[in-house]
Image (cartoon, rainbow, N blue to C red; front, top):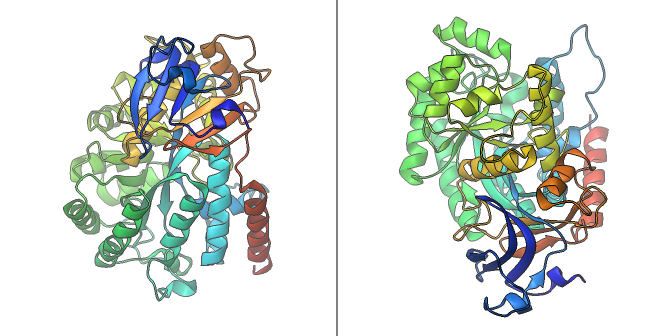
Length: 474
């Protein structure tokens, strides 16, 4: 067992990434609830002058804040690799969605729990410490409600609790198949809820979430899936119940969605949302890929977080978010793994930066100002934005925040002998990106040691069995 694995509520790091940037000789201390109560810099670990510094566990490499994953559809992890073939003259998001619906309609509660357990374990091993679960498969086959209406939501909560990942559960309101109130398709039956039914589900889930320190919010799926009256009533009902609860919505992901919204309302999706909803810092705009200059400005001014999912957006051919324009307007952002074509916090950052380089034909696009190191700048911004979107105190290594952090392997070839900021850049840009993750802690509890979660083998086997059963039922 490494020194930093010992039972302790303190950790000494020679280098740690604080919200203000990299700091040397940092002592982190947290209480029994897993909340950071002291973050000291410039500490001599041998002097004993800083209370518990002399006896603190020693980190084996640079310490970075745990990354919130602000957008996840857990069941889609088992769908990976099943759509990477050309099925028609021009494949798109929409052809992928048809295949995904078929897969969703074979999902059982047992399969969902096994898949989510493995996924959340993967997330932890790859540097995520919390997840926002955008959960829209609610009912049994054909849309028949389970005897316990929260059956599938509870499966996800159990998966989070078993693995130790932080959770923000976002049940999805889904009512129509297109703008203008088009009736739902037959293959969407498992997703459909009335507004009153959704609010009743939230009431039912609130105690279960509180019991495991999970947060609860709402995800109106999209403007095409939630009519205006329902959107207004659902958000009002949520905030009457839970005033600070997050609201996440898919928006402007595809150009067809933009065209359809224009045909329906005469306005683009983000434009319509800004004009018809009280969007504020509680909102997270997932993707928001296709916006005008004016939409970038108005959405950023609202205080909402942009939820960018670079590897999924690349996998689905969505397009490229204009991050420099968003940042020019003071926009906040975080990253999610969405469909989980890739499950790796550093990989999302790499893909985001590389997409900007390809679009602009420049390098080091997202560094600058106070943080010229790209990996440092992106990590700090993504952690802050992800924490806001999750509605949880997970905004980095600061007093009052949860003790969620990742210890990198200082002896890894991508980091060894380098200053901490360059080693961190090596982790993001020059390693296998999960290979340099040594330890992961959530709420002051170690969940990953030597790169592995203790449930790795059993969870992996259960995942493979569940996926095989789902494929046999096709």
